[in-house]
Image 1 (tube, rainbow, N blue to C red):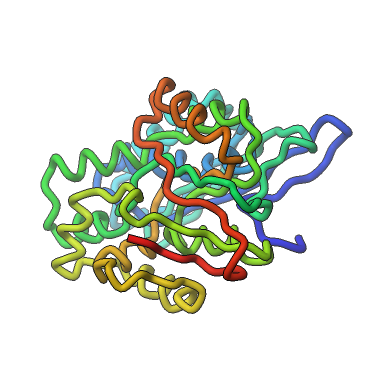
Image 2: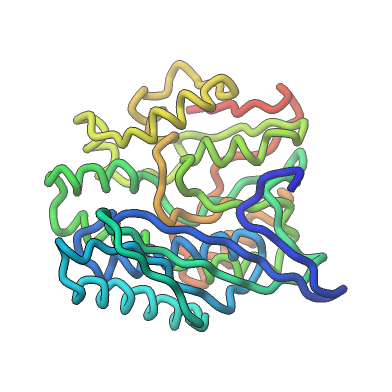
Length: 305
């Protein structure tokens, strides 16, 4: 508990530890089935980010019985169950309550070897950073809620959010991962800050390499930002040094809160090219090198064009 990480880990024996995590939220797409898929992928992600294998899950749902059809709840749970099946995770129960606002998510338990846990706090100077999914889902989800997003954009962002981080995690287990986290509610810079704090080192981020969805840039230019982006910016901007050449819109997107975002790995420089090729060969096509760990200035994020 001395440092916050993506999930809790409890050692059972010399060769077995369990990972425990829980996550739930309100709908970010209208389709109940896909909401269930996204919520499940999001909950499973923290186990992958710790280097573990999720094994069991329990549903958590809050449902407004007086204003919604129970068929919608059934479809949400079906979506979650199908995503669990894809991940080879067993659903072993759950709990539901009546509430005025719909919420759904899961509590997940996974396994990991105690000596093979990935923490977010072990970045090394000279490491390179690999990100496995594009960012901008928070902006696009805001546009969806406002009725501005096209069907093709909704389908695109839905598929990205529903994609498991399983393949990326499995590929990277063949490499010496120094640190890992998943990019969710604190945005890319917020989660990167968590990797930097307490390390004594800094990160140089190449802004032009960061994969940002084109639709997110378009909607952000119209002012369609989620409130969480500005909270993230306010909280972490003191440790971020931006080049004057970076578009203010892009600066804010780097703080955009993500739903079921990708994994961010810190690995030794001489492994990065092979790791990227391996990720691409296994279908993680959007994986890309976005920066590196540097010694100075201490515990800062330097964002270059």
